[in-house]
Length: 409
Ligand code: ASP
Ligand code: MG
Image (cartoon, rainbow, N blue to C red; front, side):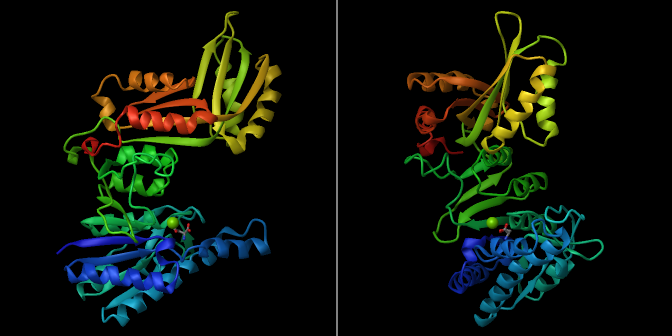
């Protein structure tokens, strides 16, 4: 008999009909002899609706009260699912984060889990009941309701799975799993059977937003086997696992991309110690996240420093740099808002040579100019003109034969 934590996102519990379907699914797992802890999100759109109510009252709602409000969304879905299970003759109990005692720190609206008390859940499982837990929420030391940040139910599920030493944590969602790239962009995008935690982290931080990044970090840290799968279609989904468990590591897991980026270039920066700091420092101080950075030497001995930011931060960054120009001192600042970033991700890069050269060859053959290149141990990213994004993703997907199932670990 195994213990499975199953998390159902907002689209999976969007209506009473959906909740009934989730109850049927859980019953099938119970019939196979599994113990089930279900973790639910609020019904689709509900968290947004609640947040909007708060914003009607004040621009910046009191964080403590905002949490008290937002956490009610999950309280609705868990009670309904527990009823649906009871109506099917199954014992079920719903619990809020506070009732379980998912203890968090005091940072309202983005609280971090400190401790999970498993006694109550274990006692219910012992009695043969399905436990239906509210995702996204906890309780602070002083007894206030806290929430874990948008998408936080994934993290709740992983935290419960870790605390209960569950055999698997299944995240049910509206896609079939993790793909080699966005299937809306590339027809041949293939569902991955397995992927490592590290690869998943890179893919999610690069725009493949299937799971909350914190949940993936948490699962990696506590070695919780995590599976992403569809609520609506049968299938094995994607298992996110430790590298050692992968039989044969393919070089590349997938092609990720980020469309909404902008590039800033500061020209004529003196080639002296501290100059790069004078460029990047004021930008980071304003809380703007600086991504890919590159420095090029110009013929006159000065440097050009380019870096990327999120497109929404572009104008603000430009303003900051223009102010900094005289004190750097630099010549000019240029802004390019039409850029995109494409990345190859794969733990197999560590042991396979020639990945970068094949990548550059494929882009070159399509006439795509690379503006910036950065690499890490399991990732190579290039910054290119935005209009070539789709072409680049398709070219890389086929250059690395990612549509072929034999490339799946
Ligand atoms: N209901 C919360 C949200 O929409 C938490 C979650 O769905 O994971 O962010
Ligand atoms: Mg969600």
